[in-house]
Length: 448
Image (tube, rainbow, N blue to C red; front, side):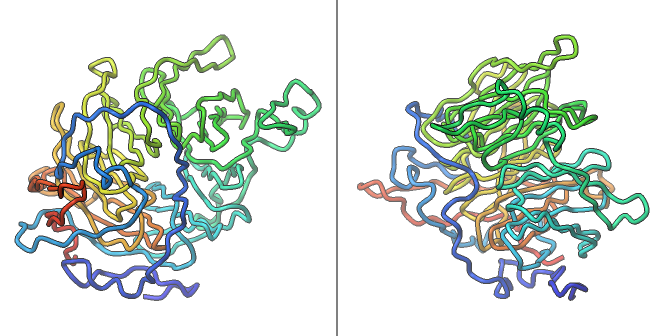
């Protein structure tokens, strides 16, 4: 099907094993997957739940950015309810951000465009005239987008025409920026001979998150800070220098806690306090300190577990019921984890290895249900919504969208009742090289 604007809109996948993607160009991925990496000194915890067991000291495990390897498919593996439904293809840029709102899907790319999809068809779109769209978040009728140029733009859906989106301003507002600029004390030194206003990010926006009551917007940036915005009047309430390197992820969690992950290899916890009319955030604790960059964060829907993904391909997690003590590591990827989401009892991680791991949480344990494959490039972003077609058995299913640097968005149906994946043992040669294995990919490629 062709869209009115000439872009291919929706296509069913033709093969059960990921064939039929020949219309997508084989892309040379950018060197930077929009998550900065640097070096720290302390290794990450290594208690592991995993469908593959790898030696963390091997060169294979130590080089998460070095190559993109696709494991062969095990033809004998039994099929599961997790299936690939199709693709949204508009080859105009790498996909960096996704957000869902009702029956609408918003996609952001390095083409500077935000596309809006409805019922798997292109519904609308609007252009930012700025850097690539690195983050999208929706609060009521307003859409906030974070960009590579450090700006946050605010959009509103027209009350007369739901397909029209109008830009209503930026964060910070121009009048706040001008007012702030007159006071020399509002400038902070960011590098030698360069001062900037504290209310504005001076490097790329990496992530956006809403507080539990949706009254506050959090923005994290490669400028090592996160900022707090009051949504009601678009005012910047606070700027926190949070890390020693780029802040790659931020998420507002539970109990007035905010979690940040950085290229400095740490995950930090910040406590929000209201002091009269003033909102302040104070450092609480460091959950993780490692040599690999933290690239993604998520909190499950029950607000009981915090997850972090990092450039070594691991997902660490902490249990709220255990006072945020480290509870384990999920190992399912060969390369860096680039995105994380939680949906019901499921946790999904997208990776530079082009795959998506689907985990189910059962109490304190996690089981890998599927490794969804089909993308021709790193999986940069994920979004999920409940599947409206419920099963008579009461099985809870989700529609998952995955955006990739192959310029496509894929649409999957995943089930919380899917059977677990088989485990395989990763073997190594005496010199530490990983031997070829057959990773049992879940049947996530079936035609719908």
